[in-house]
Image (cartoon, rainbow, N blue to C red; front, side):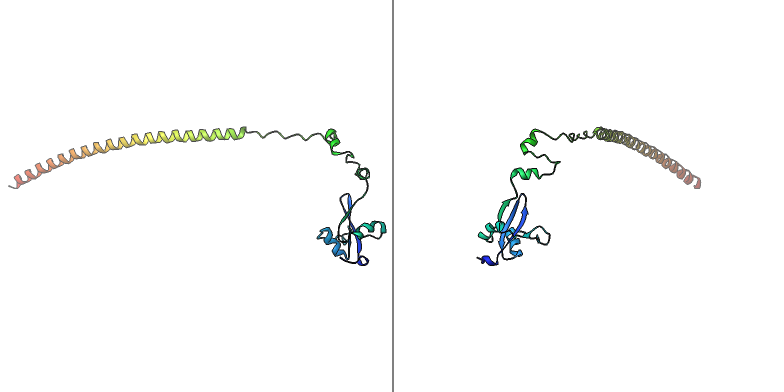
Length: 179
């Protein structure tokens, strides 16, 4: 335990309280408060010279001693004027009339989405209809092609037979002519 003669008392505000600590240095005081920042350099912490304020922390060196900075009434009176000075229960009972409640924006209109979905569905149905019509036309064209090929095959066959008979007659006539 450090000797009291080497201890100094330091103070920093924490909310509605002041935190006092008796420590050998500012660094030890910051460690006792759990602060990583140099509160002394920021002007937030200070050395206490008042013997009345230093008495309790010197009696408990290294321990943080909290003291209220006034009564609850004094603290409420110190609040800014634009804030209600009553307890939270009173705040709930008497809501502030300064601001009207915020109006909720209306729900976005879904009609354009529905319209686009209907148009998409109609386009898909139209595509299926046209695809079926083209498939039907393709089947009809395929039947016509097969019928035409069959008719050509038969016609070519008849013409080839006719040609062969004509050739046979010609060759027979040519043999007779030659003698």
